[in-house]
Image 1 (cartoon, helix red, strand yellow):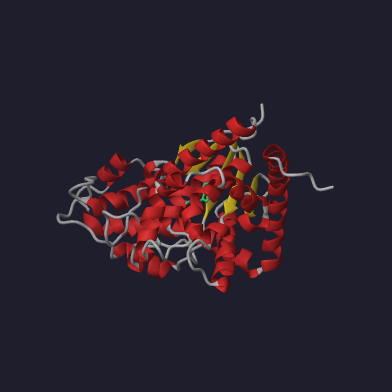
Image 2 (image 1 turned 45 degrees about the vertical axis):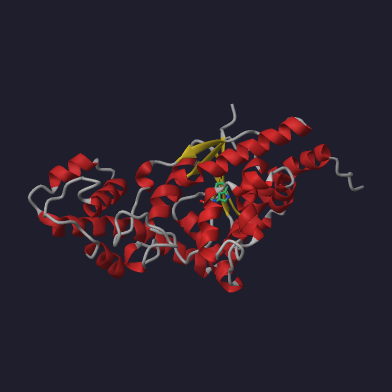
Length: 334
Ligand code: TRP
């Protein structure tokens, strides 16, 4: 039997992925390429739903792609591509937009959160239709599984609803995907505010560990991470959110279960523990940073790798879209 297909996407909205992106998404994508027919997409069309400077978008799209390859996505096994290279995403999105109710789209909580930042009437219509474009990304490839964080559950439900609606109205066309909610290591929190998620949009620079950051600043940030009163390294989410976050990070990076770490640092205080966390972060990020720099130094080669991905993605997208056009009733173009 063919391998189940996965599809996921990541926005090119930063100059580096951070530890939360890496543990919560990228690292698990790399694992999934072993067992799945994997499609991973740098979603630049989604990035422009909020005001974006063209040079920054170009740079960040390449940086995102380079980091995906550097983190271990193998272009032989995974189809890594840029969303805007495959025109069918926008084409299918339009068809799905026409199947979506205003009320249905208006219930999306991520839109409500994001638009609140701009003031609801200043938010773009693109931001409003963001989840429908995401549905198109997924349905276009007939994906079985979509690895995402828990915050994307609602978008996955919309995707299934729209796929089902299309199938019902126009005949069976789309595979209905299941969400694959990524493991709770995604609960990496802000180093300076350990009760809030580590997030590009809300954390201060001192609270974020960037994959492409130099070892010096990385170490400093870990050493300066907010810790809790007391001096014992214990896992206690409510009473010691800072130390608990560092324990989660250390455990995720070294594969050592948290209880084992707690036992190891008994009687040693925070300093030794933090030094080891910093070490684990550096050791994980250094090779990724070096490979990313190498890939970015040869833009032509990177663009060529992405062209190969786009070609493979296009082959699938074209096939789905041909069916969609026919079923909707668009005339064939002779
Ligand atoms: N909305 C997703 C996020 O913010 C990114 C995304 C866009 C995506 N298209 C997708 C994820 C398709 C999975 C599948 O994380």
